[in-house]
Image (tube, rainbow, N blue to C red; front, top):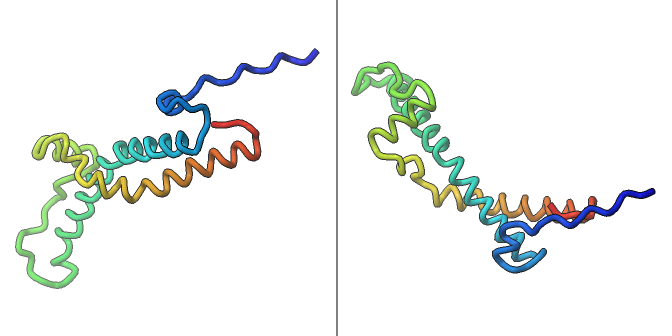
Length: 131
């Protein structure tokens, strides 16, 4: 005896907000929200990484270029990512971790939207179900 068919999944958050079941507009809105969330989650790490890289370049630039250093080369200010983030929060405030959020979003948005829309399209085509 065959098993009964599965009930349809509940509508997703964006679909409920737009009042549509499945449309390109709902997929696009979900992809934009995903891009925002990706940027919000990744920007603090990007800021800390940039600070650590710039510190390394500044400290060793004079040695590489065979110029007398203006300041003596000392131990790095940021020995690891966590200390770098804590130092940024302590000195500049917590919102400093999200400096440059708009450029990060502008860089990530096209990729995120294209990958979400492509994944949804491929899933519908090959599996016959929406994600």
